[in-house]
Image 1 (tube, helix red, strand yellow):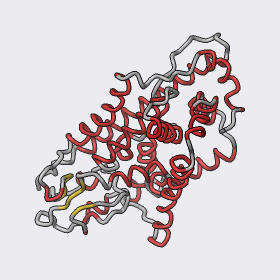
Image 2 (cartoon, one colour):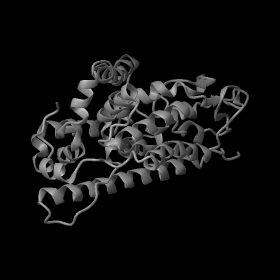
Image 3 (cartoon, helix red, strand yellow):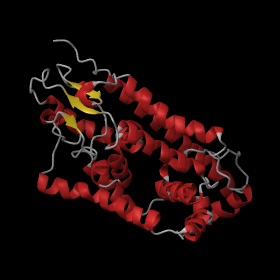
Image 4 (tube, one colour):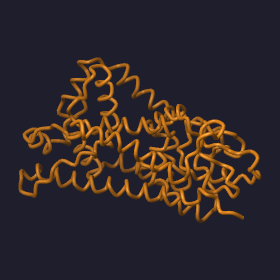
Amino acid sequence: MKQPPYIAVRKYRLIVQSGVTALVLFLGYRLWQFSLYYETHGRTQYIPHPDGVEGFLPIGALTSLKYLIVTGHVHPMHPAALFIFVGALLSSALLKKGFCGWICPVGFLEDRLYRPWRMLFKKNMALPKWLDYPLRSLKYLLFVFFFAAIVLGMDLPALHSFLDGDYWKISDVKMLKFFMSIGGISLTIITMLVILSIPIRNFWCRYLCPYGALTGILGILSPFEITRNEEKCIDCGKCAKNCPYHLPVDKKKRVVSPECTSCMTCLSGCPTAAIDYATPGGRYKLPGWAYPVALLCIFFGVVAIAKLTGNWHATVSPEDYQRLVPIAESLMHP
């Protein structure tokens, strides 16, 4: 039997996910070196602020997006957070939830946690529908909470109070300190999420991530969908069995679910190449190699625009860093 043309997409995805995760770890290490310089009052080597760590500050990014919409200007404090956020949203609107399936390092980590279970039991563990559907709604409820609090609830003075405040200035350092000196309750919660992600694939992404809820909603706008060619399909059901989110790919002509992350697992497992990533009617198709290229061009294209327009580097002064980094853990959210 002819090998499916999308089989190599698994390798492409692994390469992209591994590369992004390595970059994130490097930026985290540089942030630690950067903060150490100010904690020791200049007794260690100075490392410039690693712009890009703001990708883990989505709440501040949403606040910055609201500020941009209201004022028409990019707030100068940690603008990288805004542009990384916009890159994720734009790529999702054009290519579905690809940011979650290909770029987000949390999704990559969950894939690694789940792999031993998959190798041992040879199938995805699926929760019963009476439990799965209510749990899925949690991430949308969390997104609604943040949307109401920030987009609907914050006026211009409130936006300035947050974005100009000391908390936002060093929120990336606070994030670092949170993970480096994590408390008992937080460690217990994270440990539970890790344990649950071993048998239940992508537990955090599937049930709790409000970021994923937003990218999924925007993904409905994408002209491209997982598309099944009914003439080629032999009803083997492998596409649905392999889907991380248990979507009924084998029963649908086009998968429009906001849960689909465009991970291409269903395509790479189809023995007859009956599944494509295409526009309605199959007029335009993205080959396996073209999807990651298009996704990365969109996402990092937004990053490049930020850099070219001078809207990437954080404008926190050295004096503010020296004043705030040593007391970062005591700063409270405004």
